[in-house]
Image 1 (tube, rainbow, N blue to C red):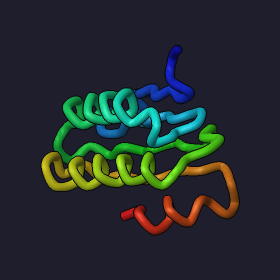
Image 2: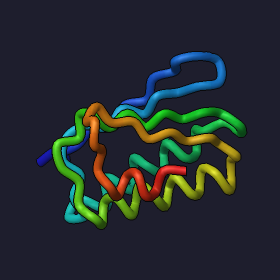
Image 3: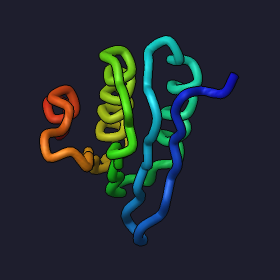
Image 4: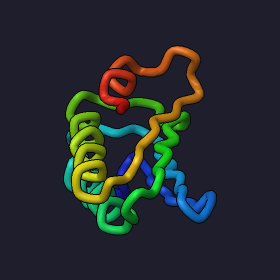
Length: 101
């Protein structure tokens, strides 16, 4: 059975990429989620801005959010990549706000 989420990368300018995440992110699907997130990390360029577009995320649990936060930290420390969390909701998930940097 395919995962309940999808992650797509779109180059929006020379120094910016948008990471579009949609569906349900659950820790129960940690293995495929981690594989996709690590793939993003290895393809990030030093100093590049990565906009995490999460407006199509229907559900996210704490375990999946922890994986996202871990990759966010790795992108910053190992690649110097700038990250921005985006959500269509006027009141985004507090977990996303707390981990945005």
